[in-house]
Image 1 (cartoon, rainbow, N blue to C red):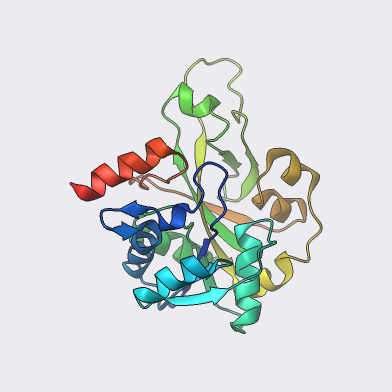
Image 2: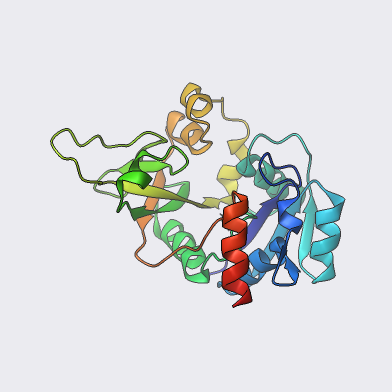
Length: 243
């Protein structure tokens, strides 16, 4: 199955400005993300950025770059511009790999692409892992997801959902921020009206559900690596990749 990976990478970041270019084991972080994407079954890997410094770094290790506007509200909006700008045909599967995931497994990228390709109803697919601690359940930075028996997302939230009325132990699923899309859906994604819950929770995927489209959720059992959101995350990844 052929699919394309697009890696949105901004220079601006509230907590770690320029984090796509931060050094990890002698290479910029974006180089590690590209390497993980190239370990998947993707036939094409593209970095989407609005910053020439990131573009120059990516071109130095011979990966394709697409320059995009700087005013996108989300990574999905940025990838929608890539699909339009590069005239990617309908029927393609596009996987959004975040630019701050230097340890993401190629198997996870393959999984969400394969799941979407096998569906006849979903416009997107994503992934989740079982929650195993109260700290994770109650952490607003760990997004939770509830899905039905067909594996279709019902809601995403920063709150602990579903709420276990009669239990005190952690339960539920943490959302993993990787998405596969159908290219034709991306062409209309940025035209969808914004959702009130999207702005309340600050979760772009809620726009999709609010407009009546289907997102598949695959449960994964293997580790997904450490995403780099903080200085502590950065040091943990540096230690792992250096060792």
